[in-house]
Length: 328
Image (cartoon, rainbow, N blue to C red; front, side, top):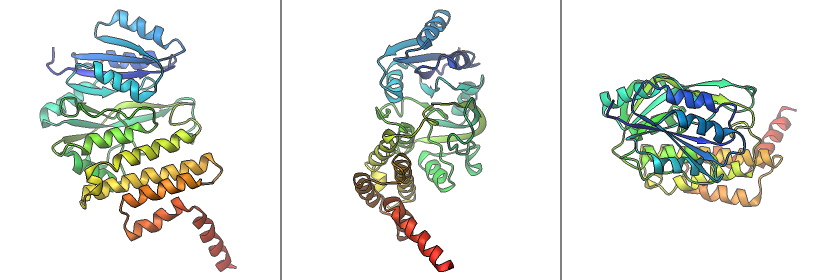
């Protein structure tokens, strides 16, 4: 048996249609020292029955049921149980390639690294390609097949506009990063978790590989495709607030600037989502919160020009009216 034990953590909530495919992809890994931890997050369909059936057949599978509390709490529960030296998160409506773990472990051994990032395949299952905005799933060419510091990786990913924060798109060593957990009861928690993994410890090493090892399913009524609500707005704002607590956000360094740029992107998405939910309007409460947080990112004069319409979207209407007037 290989010495390196990998814990695959799978939060499960009402995914009876996809769960067997997900579990089989974890069970059939060609790495032979794996524990599979499935956290049933208060499912009301047949998901728990499927989990129990799989558990009776596979000794390396653990099933724990908790009251429904969301993805973050389910993943944190899995982390508390995990005994593996390495962690992989797998969403219960997705699946991984048979060689996902073994490929990553090879790079852990070869490069003595702490996190191995890989690329992803995305496919649409009952959802239209316009149902959500999918960013490019391949890592930036300049970072592929490279090993570097985590902070350099983050900085370059932001600079190249190819930062992918999903917690499912990498495997990491648990021992160095064990104190970082998911923020409970918010959406977009991966933006916070992954960024903290990369930035809170200044001696973390990252390896980025080209292999597409994860298969992401885009389906109706998933977190990515569901209709936007106030909780989506709040998720972006909480991520911004928590990242601003990092010392790097206050530093005049290249990584500090990249972090603040990422925070500004979260605030922009909060503004856009709020306007989408409330018919193009931005409430005074959200406007004030955005202004306070934007100021903390210490924007340059150039950035301020781009930021202002996110706080005062009325400026866009004025600019459009002036443009029409000048063409008459």
